[in-house]
Amino acid sequence: MKQTLRKRVVVFLFTATYATTACCQCRYCESYENFTADQWTEIDTIYVKHHSKSRQFWIGGNDYGLSTGEKATDKYLKKNAFVVMQGDTLYVNCQNLRFEGTRFGNGFVRAIRIGNRSLLIVNRLIGKKAMNRAQVGMMFGAIGTAISVNDNLKQQVCYVISKGANDKGVIDIRLIDDHLMELMLEGHDDLKLEYLSEQDDSKRQLATRVVPLLERAGIIKSPKILGSGF
Image (cartoon, rainbow, N blue to C red):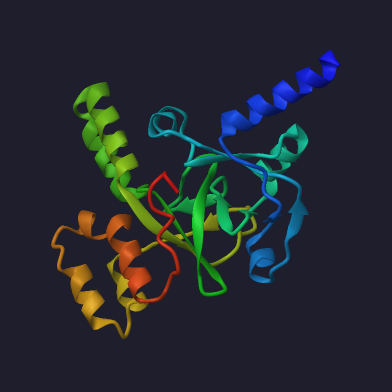
């Protein structure tokens, strides 16, 4: 009786910690190719834990941590899963993603489909621009560096995943910049002008600006990728 009660308490604490209920439709794809071919592997349960911005700052992780409650399965997903689905929500594994040779770190981020072959994710700005800001911060010591890195965490931008891993297991992704936005908003001149009306390119390319425009253009179906409250 005591052992049964103890198990119930452990299950309750685990569920409370992750603030997520079990989902009957949980599955994953090991690769981009499996995703585009709609080849999924079913799993029983996925718990989702949201990481605070402070944790992301100090640990270098991404928005979410996923768990099944089984260490072996968790380890496998962390290493081998390309994308995980809980219900109708997609989570992309950031471990192998690269932009301009820079990695995002471990963990998962939410994603939304663009057509049948691409995924859009929102994450912090990395790459050459982020590196330049960090170098400027170094000129002002540890406090300046911390401020510049924290600023990059706030600079949430959009990236597109539209191809699989190379022979080293790395997935190169694209930033949705002015050029890509022009292509994506083809035929939507009003939205294109609205996008370009912001003169500051660092503000123009923010996800809070890009995602609503893509939704209004009918390119994506849901803006729920933005923010941590979804």
